[in-house]
Length: 116
Image (cartoon, rainbow, N blue to C red; front, side, top):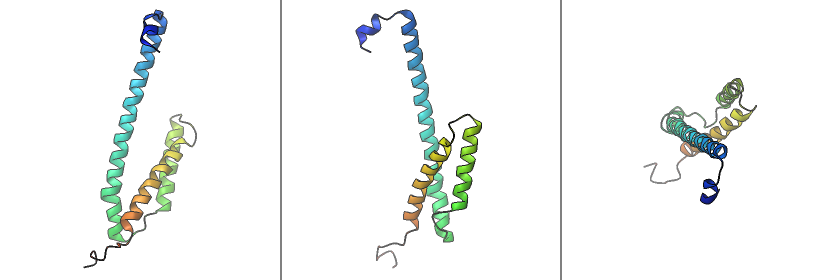
């Protein structure tokens, strides 16, 4: 809406736009919190899980653990009234990125100097 249109609004419209702006600000804060939580999660998978898997010679993929995480996230989402399957989809997406990082970490080095 243009600035001159804002000045010509009735009070109800102005109040509704104010509430909309506040709601959008709250959504932005929640998005920031989600990003920060994902940052923490990826920090753990990068700095702890991946290196431990490498140390133990474990594969990047742990299908049982992945299924457990997806089922847990899906159930939690549904319990809280989120759309069915949303949390499963989000969790699968996160796992895909983590597995890709772990595959790179666990891949044999192609650097000839690394073996010396």
